[in-house]
Image (cartoon, rainbow, N blue to C red; front, side, top):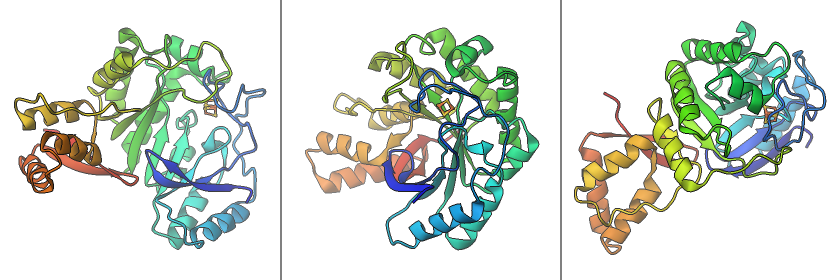
Length: 312
Ligand code: SF4
């Protein structure tokens, strides 16, 4: 297979069949944390790098293999939307299967109307936003000339207006770069304008080209979750174990946690299990009663069910 890989297990997308549309590494950015290494030469012109019919044939082959696939995910060895013809690929995949389609993108080309149009039929779009100011954007994402912070944010804002699918903005949290209170407040303000359905907070756990890239400690991650959740529910990158043992009021405690970040139903069941000594009937009763309060919605992410607090 040249273009298709997996399915790979992904916390966010369950069993995700990856589709790589680009020669490595073709990107408009040169992020300090990029797992593909430094961008040697920026690529900024969109084109059909490989024949779309060949890519489609591989996707359909993989889909008919019988393997469990939760999402078909377009994700390039660089910036996915540099591939011209994504709309055709998405439409053809959707004609052939009901498996939802996701596009992972840095979002740098969303300021172009034709790029936003190509994404309209995707079920989820996952663009990046790593900074709430032009200065930090330049330091972290190191874009090609002309790819400004203002254009980036405008592209995300316009996509939100035009796109009806799930918009999950990915934020890479980097120690000492964008994990300060001020940087996070800036980012939360920008995210509030964009209005994503969810924020996926991710950490630079893979080898990065720049030695200054590090993972913030848990306390800073929690602070980031708390600050960014003012803009949208935040999917926590590496959950600690939920402890409900000292909860005076179970409903208020679970609602307080879920208002900061979505709570995985499995995790909630485990925490209730500890509270009720594994009594399955009591766990079920507590789950039913919490949900019956009307304070939560359930959303599916990949294979996982999450509880979020209902917005007014
Ligand atoms: S946008 Fe993605 S591929 Fe491009 S440099 Fe950044 S991390 Fe690497």
